[in-house]
Length: 198
Image (cartoon, rainbow, N blue to C red):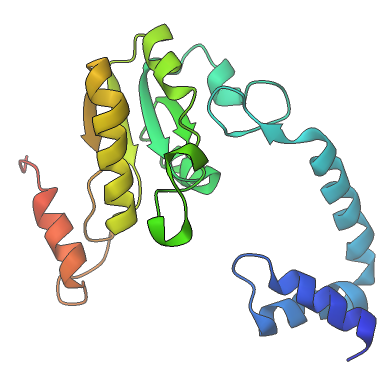
C-alpha cells in the first residue's frame, strides 16, 4: 500500500464498526474504484461539521439551538427517556413507540474507564424535571453492570429527590428469537420484564 492510502485506511479504522478489512474496503472504494463518490462525501461532511451541533435541551443532533423533537409541541414534555447515546434515541424513534422527549447522557458510569457523574450530561436534568413538571423518567440504558449502576445513581441522586416516577425499559427475547438460543442474562431479563398476557 502507498503511504497516503495507508494513512486514509488508518484514520478510517478509528471509526466505530470499521476494522482493518472494512477500512481497507472503504478506502479502496472511495479512492480507486469510485473516486467520483469522494467529493460529494467530503462536501457533505464539511457541511455537516459546520451546521450540526448538540441540542441545548436534550443533547440530540440539531441544526438549530433545539432539535426537532424538543421543538415539537406535540411531544409530551412531562415524560423524558434517558438514553446513553444519540443512536439509541434514533433507534427508539424508529420504533414510533415513544411520544415524550429525551435526554442523552453521552455515556454511562464506568469507574474502570474513569467515567464519573460529572462526565455525563446530567447538569441540566434537574432543571428540566422542575421546569417541565416531569411526571415520568424512562431509563433506557444498557442492560449491563455499568448501565445498571448508572440507572441506580440517577434514581438515587436526581430522580428520587424530585419525586418523579421512574420506569425501566424491559429487556428480553428479540422478535423472532427462540428461548433455546438466548443467553441466561437475556432470559433473566425477559422473565423479570414479563407482563400480563392479553
